[in-house]
Figure (cartoon, one colour):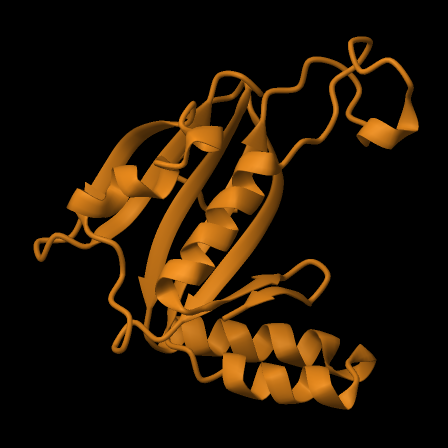
Length: 174
C-alpha cells in the first residue's frame, strides 16, 4: 500500500474511497482543510502534513487522533487512473451485485475524482471488535469513528459516493 504516513507504531486497518465529479464539485483547498473537523464531536482530530498543488488544492492531508491512537491519511487523485480503478472494483464484485447495485456502480464508474481515506491504528494489544469482549479496558479494539466521520463529511461536501473496496459496498451516496 502506498502511503505517506510513515510511522512504524501504526498499522493499516482499512481504506475507503469517496468518488465524485471534481469538475462540478471542486476538491478541497488548503483554506478548507480545518473545516473538515470543525464539528465539535471530532474537533479533537489534529490536522497535520498538508500537501497542496500550485493551485491551492489539497493533494494529501493527515488527521491524527491522540484520543484513539489512530490516524487517517487523505489523498486526492483524479483522471484516468481513478476511472480504471473504479472499473476494476466493479469487475471484481459484479457477480455478487443485484440489479440496483449494478446501476449505482454504472454511475460511480463515471466519477473522475477520488479521495482515498487510509485508516491506521496504533495497536495496544490483540485487535478485536468491541462486541467480542465485555471489558474494553482489557484490549485494543477497532474503532473507525474518525474514518467514518471524515468519509461522510467528504461525501456530503463533494456530492460524492463512498465505497469500501474490500467489500464492494456503497457506504454513502449523495
